[in-house]
Length: 69
Image 1 (tube, rainbow, N blue to C red):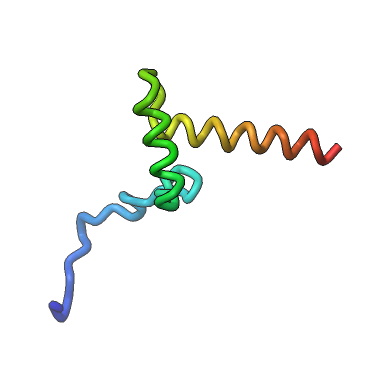
Image 2: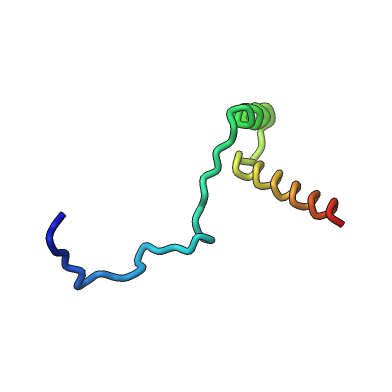
């Protein structure tokens, strides 16, 4: 490391992003990946793995809301 650094032209917060704007990687278990990839290969469609998992999570949230009432 240098003894001193020049921050004259530095911009504070240049690379800062709030946590809400970060894309968080989510890793599926191997069993789930195999299941989804098999289902996707069986039927030609426009869905990506990301789209399918998001739809399933949204459905699960709706079911949970209905069961809570």
